[in-house]
Amino acid sequence: MTIQPDNTLISNREMLIELVMKPLRAVGHMLQHMTVSNARTQALQEIWSIPEEELRAKGLTRADLVSMTFRHDA
Image: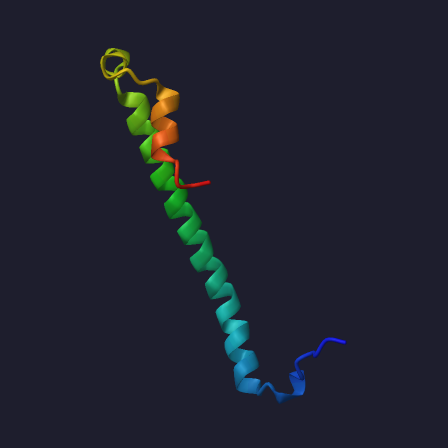
């Protein structure tokens, strides 16, 4: 048997704060997601702007650069 929280102990002020904060948290998460997506896009654009000759001189492929850039995103 699990213990359920007793909602009758939550005050009206706490419920109002939660009602106001929930959409604000959602907007915050959306902005954070957009920032991360934009940073990834910029990183990919930088990788694609490297000339093929420069990659060959370093002994790398674009796939190698992508995996090195995003290796911590798994």
